[in-house]
Length: 251
Length: 316
Image (cartoon, rainbow over all chains, first blue to last red; front, top):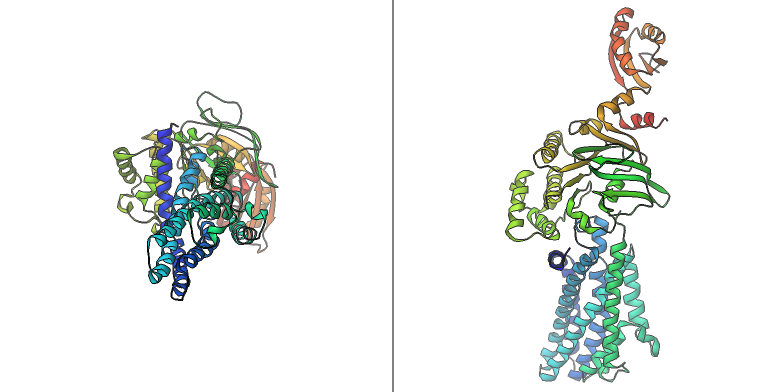
């Protein structure tokens, strides 16, 4: 198959999967999470607070710290696994499209859908807080920084959870462990061990972009090293997942 | 089609093929050659038909032996899928998509696009008589409509080989007839080689005379169906005869060479006779009934089910 035909197949699969993701119940979950974040940040915004620092801290804790890996897990753990379990993947697996290319056709819409979901949640939280505290240039910079961070996080976490959905029969169990125990706990304890979490490198990048709140004074790895680790992890999990998918027996 | 050797016009060749799932054997030392035309693969549930098809499609890889399709190994060979269309026996249509969206997806996955794809979708919808439901969600289709749409999906790229796994399963008699006619047309008018599976021998007989009988992961017979029928006829058959005065009938039957045994049923209203040569038995029975004067009210074979036939063929 030449590259043009492969791109045609990837494009078709991307559109099909993206439509499936954006029309699924995951949209309702996104809306509920956005409402929750809006409520929490809206309440905080109604109090007497340091707008820029506390706003950045809330986005850091609620969005980057907690909901980023959780939403990626919710979207990513089921995409390929559901099709394998329902056997609707047969039409993809019996097409003249190398499964490694087909895997890309699942990854791209997943990363886009998680990005869209996280941007919506971030925007809901930001607006509910800063509308009460006032939206100025500094507030807008905070918003743009966290929006960029959740997009980067979406591509990294999506590669991880998509690979685990091929690797495990019940990927959600691994996803829960990873999102809550590894990222939530290991990624928060002091010392070098937290460098074993994706969150550390996302916050390291964020510390260069955000001038307010705890993230700005974070004991970060260098920007270059963090970007390299995030890119390396994404590529590693993409190649690993594509290899697993290619070698997987679909019985 | 045969189970040994290969010819230049082979479509599928399996040699000493073995596939197992943990301790469960899917195929065991399986040998088969399928040639052009329509070929029926017949076997009871669990005989390995679906495993064979998954190996043909490269969805799973064999543990032992070798399988080739058009001379190529299927596992890891996505290019081969251009030549194969597959209609699975399970639900595989995305329920939230319309028939047109489904066919469009499959067409794009086969590198089709634009006006060519659009006209092919219309053409296939007409062929499988689904034009009226093309823009309806597949989740609302009946079983027969789903089967037709899956067949359309398998045909979208005009494959040389079409594999239909239990296409008649769960459909009503009218749909069965239509699907049987469609299968024959696909071969006769459109030139597709078709491999179709079923666990009902007479359904396959209506489509083709080339059959392979599978049982417990092995080919127990293959070739022209009339040869297989004669092979089956060489094995003892159990036949139940019910009516009045069956004792005299039993006594007369015991004198015949083809009679292996005669047993009275629990209700004493019938006998079960085992015969070694069913053809001779059925030919001679009317005269025996006349001679003994018994009134036969019903007669049926216990061996009509495929499982019993296969047990004979494997010598159990």
